[in-house]
Structure formats: structure tokens, C-alpha cells
Length: 145
Image 1 (cartoon, helix red, strand yellow):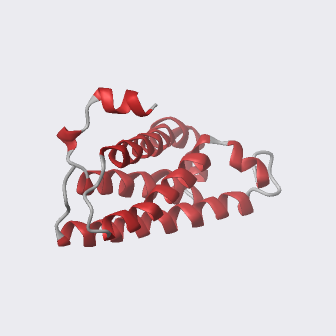
Image 2: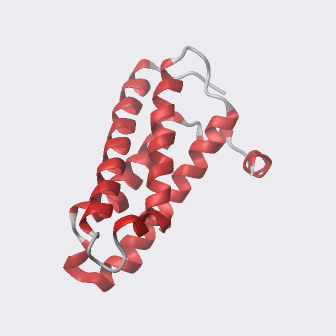
């Protein structure tokens, strides 16, 4: 695909660290804070939000090692990053525009902000930092799936 400049690598490292830490902390807080509620505890891992946060955290961690290598970023990795970014973006959009308005102030706690706002925004920004947007084709995504 293409190589990244040093400034792109530094920005991407920072964004990936923010994604990883926010996803891990937000997932932990979601599991811990909801232990005594109907939709909490270990059941929290059944939800798409948590699953996509875990996936994006893993993608970000692996991505740190990928961008540190001297090799170019492969098309397969671009597709994996794209799919993870789309999944986490979906959680952010649904939360901010569907769930949060119905929940009111109760929606804006630390775990929700981390898993539904911080992780999606930093994932999207990181995607545009490391990806050449025009390089992905529809057939690439279909081929991987």
C-alpha cells in the first residue's frame, strides 16, 4: 500500500494508545459499574458495543506494531482496520443519536463516554491518519469477508 511519514506514525501511536486505554477502561467500568443492575456484570460482554470496543482495542494494539515496522501497510490490514472502524463508529452514532437522548443525563457517565464517544472518534481519526482513503475498493472488503 504505502509507507507512513514520521509525523503520521507519531499521531497514529498517540491515537492508538488513546483508543486502547479508553476501550479497556470503558469496558472494565461497564462490567464493574453494572454488576448489580439488570444489564451489567458479565452480561455486558454480550453487547455489540463492548465487543466492538474489544475488537478495536486489539486492532489498535496490533496496529502499533504494524506501523513501527519498516514494511508498507498491507491491503488486508487496511480492510481489517476499516471494518473495525465502521463497527465502532456504528456504536457511537447509535448511542449519541438514539440512546443518549432517551436516557438523558444518566447516559453521560464515564463508561459510556469512553466506549461510545472517545473510542469511536479517535478510531475514525486514526483511520484517516493511517489510511489512504481512495485505496480501498468495495471488492477488497467483500474479498476479506
